[in-house]
Length: 459
Image (tube, rainbow, N blue to C red; front, side):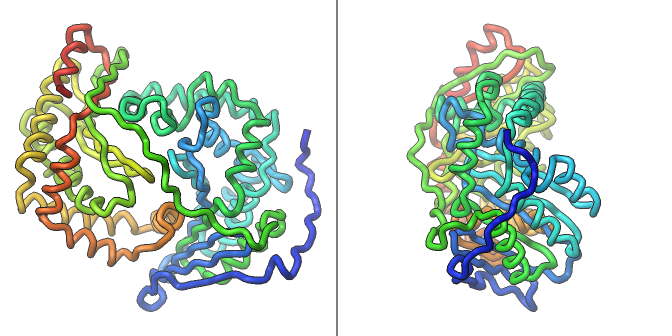
């Protein structure tokens, strides 16, 4: 059994410290919003955004691994590993990790998605060195002890149970399975009770060593920071852990994915004794690198992105058939999803689905009006800026951009892309996406006759 005692690390050679390439990717006015990137020998990328007007900083490390990288028997390993990296290193126990950030009023957390994982801490700017040291220690020095694996298994099983108790959340996992089937994209990020129970400490350690190499990581930091200082502190932390072993190593390229099989016209029903029926009606969408994603964003906003959207007006405002109704898009490396969610009384589910299907068909056939498109463009531009008003959101933007696209786009360029969307582009993507035969996922207490009629919604 590995202990948590500290160990000495050899001093890095001058060759290992030789070359670090730094470039300015976005030049902000007066230094505000300036984005810089340094690639260290060993393939570790460090991206920062400097905002001298704030007093906080958010530091994160993004790993190029998600549930998509799991085999069927490893389903849930990425999320399990996310939990375990908080359980202790050679230098810190689990309590040491949490207490260090609590002592300075910091926030620390992580999340796992289908194509990436992120660990982050938000602190006062003066406490950034502490956040860097703790998060880097977690990423490079996790012990993954058998005793910790056993303890955390219980917590993860409780998290799975909690998700299954929330049908409004669970229905999106069901929809992914409806669309992708028994493919890695169709399996739940949390895994299942069976797969989590079958995971061992040894298998998780191997998964960790394979996917947490510096070439698979992107460090992102935003706030009142100095890029050069962040680079020095991160480099020192990784070299102390002996993580930058190969100075010739190069960062891996953004994920391109393999063509994922998607279905159409499929219906999946999960019977639950709930007060509402939770439904997702949707179809294949766009990959995240598709040039049409800007037009798709406008279309999604106009259809179900706010209180003035078509679906909200038709389903809730005019008929009162649902409290929550919205549309959404999910983009992956090689494919995507478009979905419409609604929660309603079981007796109303067929009316809700009929209205949603009618609206999608009408927009696919006739398009949106110029007024709807103009309003959606304005809403999307505003929400884009408002969503980037804190250092955590900025860290997420630059970290995900580097990991998923390998490039950065300024906020002004993003706003220009949205503003440049034309009505013809929106109508074209509406025909392409909404014109497909949809699939349907439903969770609720539907009777046999009601369930049999659900196929009418996708016919």
